[in-house]
Length: 132
Image 1 (cartoon, rainbow, N blue to C red):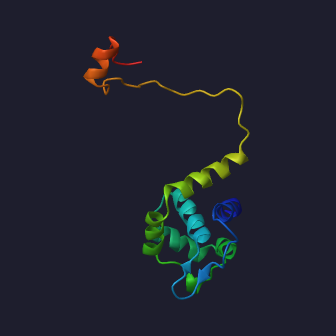
Image 2 (spheres, one colour):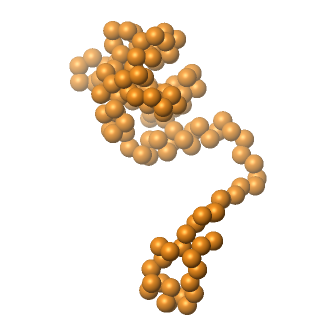
């Protein structure tokens, strides 16, 4: 979870703000990203994730939250809808730095089906194949 919090802070542009902004601010982006990553890792419902945070003091301390200011499960769910895909792509590219990528890469194309090609394309190119 420490790594997730670190990557969430790196992903958010600028200096990370305090975890909870009173009034209109709400929870900062890096806190919600870290909770969403925890939700994805545990593969549980949003309510279960928030219940787990009530019990796990170490994670609450990492996020700078207390028992009294934990987000509601609907807040976490809405945060997932609010964030753009580019933010998660940036988080993923930051995470790739953890792994040593080799020189050889491969793409598994087994089961790639070519039926989706248009008839016009098939006639124009003069060839047709159904599967690779």
